[in-house]
Length: 156
Picture 1 (spheres, one colour):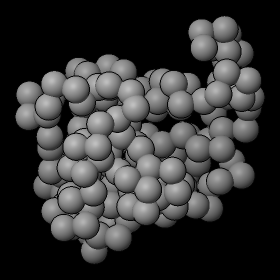
Picture 2 (cartoon, one colour):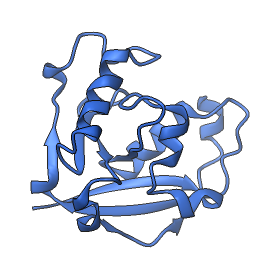
Picture 3 (tube, one colour):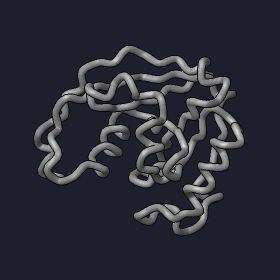
């Protein structure tokens, strides 16, 4: 079965959208600084929510593109919320969660890691490992302009 995921990035960072460079610079919930991964979401709306919770309050909501990603289900390793420690949703992310993602990426367990979203735990985020040999099997679509409704600035 083919699964789809979505990534939203600033147009100016499009050339680096699938290198893992950004996540390696700052780290994230599922990776420590220095570990290259690419964060995607199971829907465009979840990808947008993930962007919004990580933006500063004065960040402009313009200049984004949406990219569809497709991959076969057999490329995915899944971690369920039940398998995670109770504090997995805390912010900042607990080191144990980052270490779990680091091990997955370093050990090349799979090219895609399915994890529950902190924002909407019933939905999934897909973490991609751009260093995995199967990364070439991920189909990356063409970016399309993604205007963000200005009313969302009030939600922050």
